Length: 129
Image 1 (cartoon, rainbow, N blue to C red):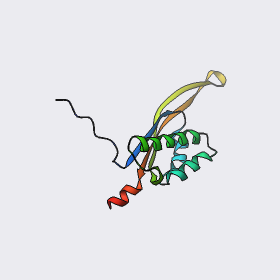
Image 2: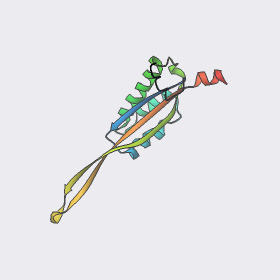
Image 3: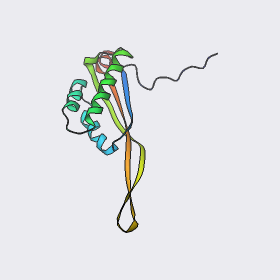
Image 4: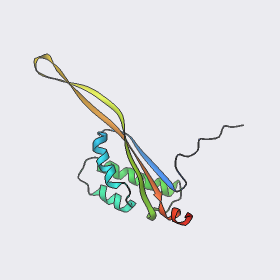
């Protein structure tokens, strides 16, 4: 008998996309995650499209990927999607050295982070309630 697959990590009315090994500090990426948390998808896309912050372009792409996952993999209605979760985690930290005066050295930390976005279809939760 074949072993059963692992159950999905999200509900039937949810879709997710993960940005791994992103070369930015979690603190900077979290500022953008806070901006889009709880917003309807169209508003969240507009927030990222017109944000002056450097990681905003990549967060915008991740939002589009989550919408594509919702539409193609889960068959959800894209007009009723809401950003249910947007959380940032730490990842690898590259450690580099910068030469300083008198033969000393200073450490340079180059952090990576990971952003997970979960979209939820609000129309299905309204029908179920």
